Image (cartoon, rainbow, N blue to C red; front, side):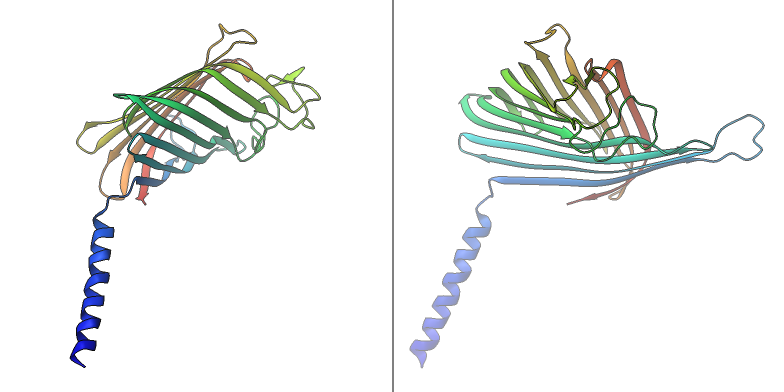
Length: 280
């Protein structure tokens, strides 16, 4: 009987020791996600100074899941965002509509430098909700896919730069959509895919401005070797979060895009509002 009790005790101790070792072994994965909800509202009634009632709202998910072990790293960021705005006597319009996945696989070369393979995919969820932009849009129309080998300078999860001089880019549209001109986002009428080959630069920098205020910078640039390489496409986003407490913050988002296949000029977007945030 004593031997049985001793055997059970030793077995339990062994299991507990294994669990302790397992829990103390650091995981190669780091996962950080934030859900946010922004709202902004103005109301005027018989206001002599003037003003138009309006309301806007946006929801978003910003999720990072990164892997790092020995000489290998794999960084992933998923951005999901959708926002609308309603101005009195006007139709509802979109203020944001994004589904984006950025992924970089790295193999250490020397110091902070890594051989890399990157992928970027982005599209939107819905059509233009009666806005006056040229041509209809929907999920995967347009859709953008970039992939290519390169070199990654990676100091941390919050500071990295990737350069890829042999990047393949696909622009995908629904060829059945009514086209505003002869081409739709650069895709010729009657076709659904445009292929480009060029150079790509992607940068990410997130830092603390001061206590409870963080600033996130995301930059993507691309030049097409096959057509007008001097026309540099770029997409630059700034996200500033000013924390009030664990769940509330004031969020500021600014984005500027230049893509002459989509629009002959700068596209800009700015949003500010009270945010409800939940980290997971």
